Image 1 (tube, rainbow, N blue to C red):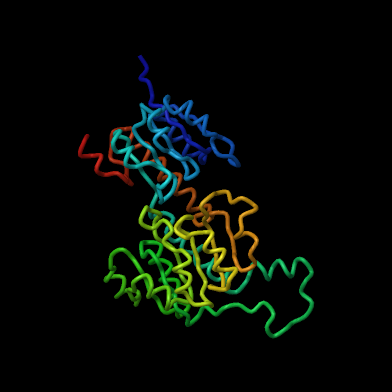
Image 2 (tube, one colour):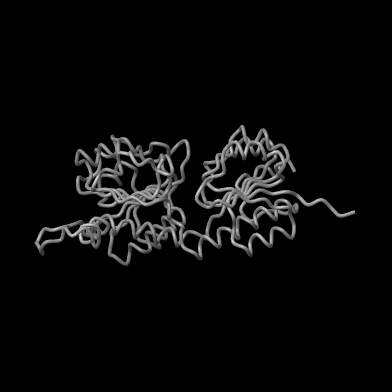
Length: 330
């Protein structure tokens, strides 16, 4: 008798080589509509059929999903972050949770620094002015921005991506500061970066880059009180997660001149509503969450997420298990 394969659901269509590999081991269903999320009701109706779920940040794997997914053994997240998953409940139910760290570090650092440069030198605004026929003449103060070289960069969250951004910044002769929940003395020595408490970093930095994970502790980490500490010429860059920076307070800080500008790749609600106040401000550069969006890196993320899924369902240790405490119960 032919063995029954475990069933898995993938909430987008992966690259063909990834899909073919998984189909050797599992019965695979995919959501094939790249431009739309899996409808919530579809996920809730069908999740009970699956042993494994490979999902994106767009899927909220909460109590309702986990309670209906009684056969689930693993939730493989195509991302470094996993705030879209109720990890505590998954652990309680014996469901492995995995993510895709490491492979996107350098690509996300590239985008972070590109966003910093585009914001400080008003690149997007300048291109639009040219294309719209508004460039009339050369003028000494026309589209003047902020210098990067020789400035002070403050990094909030000195993980792998934060360290990679710091290495890029050294090439621009930036002074480097960081704030982290724990000191990184090895990186202080390697990078010439100095630790500050959060108020100290905000007061001293010309550029503040948010690269900390989104947790209960970091939610609304940056509010109007923090903006009041920053230089009026400062620029905020967020390529971590929406919600770390209070968006209402950021809009007020930008409108009132508490800070000079902001570059954002992430938002609380994604996709961002077109009536969002931050989209109406001229001193904000906005991107649609493309931090890791290179062909090479997104392919590696798919491959790693698939490997995590496969190893977990085959009874092996997945390479990137988030809730390692689950092993004590196995």
